[in-house]
Amino acid sequence: MVKHVILWQLNDELSNEEKNEVKAGIKTGLESLKGKIPGLTDIKVEAAPLASSNADVMLDSTFENEEALKNYAVHPEHVAVADGKVRPYTKSRVCMDFEI
Image (cartoon, rainbow, N blue to C red; front, side, top):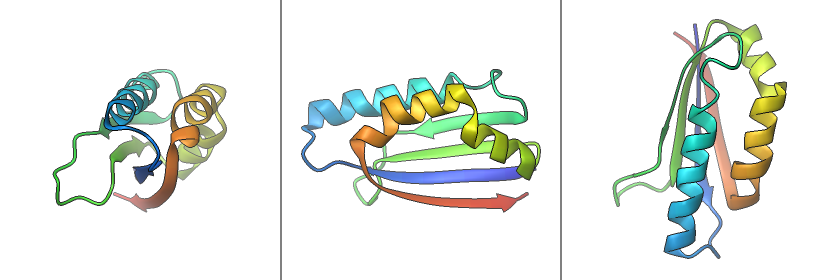
C-alpha cells in the first residue's frame, strides 16, 4: 500500500468566503474520485485546519501500490479535478508519498 499526502496553501488574494468555496470544491471533487480510479482505495480531504496550521487543505489518499499512484496522477478524472478545482486556487503544494 502507498500513502499519498498533499498539503496546499490557497492563493492570498482569495477572500475568506472564496476560500471556503474553494475548499468545499476541492473536497467534493477529490473525494468523488473514490471508486472511479483503479487502485485508489481511500481518499479524504481535510479542509478545516486549526488556527495553528500553515496549510489550508490536506489530501490523504491510499493506493494499492506505486503503479496505481502513477496511474492516478494521469487519470482523466483526477486531472479534471486538479485542473479545475485545485491548481487555479493554490499557491503552494507539498507532497509526500510513502509505503505503508
